Length: 144
Image (cartoon, rainbow, N blue to C red; front, side):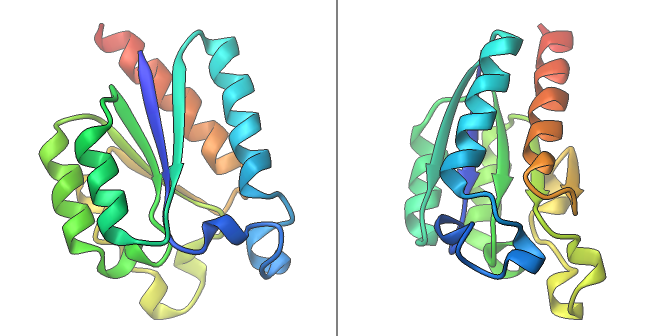
């Protein structure tokens, strides 16, 4: 079983950008925490980040995974080609956000990904990813 973790634009700057909103943990640190948890759960994981929607769409279409955890970053609100690529997968998707997007600016509260995701986890900082990983692993194990 393999889970693909996708991170969108600007998430490569975690740990350096607005720590009050996004926390002080870097993307490399998040990926390391995810790899440790995945190993403990007995599942494979692959992390991917890009600032380009086209590159993310290419990754969704080319990388084989049983499920996806995605933090689309700003693509959350307007990434329609990403949304369509994810919808074509027919694999379970969990959307994650470090901050609580529902408590932020109005334009941040709408996700084009949420309607095709199993669920959305927001506001728990880096822990949003860990909750998503454990949940998705349970869902995939129950289905097999």
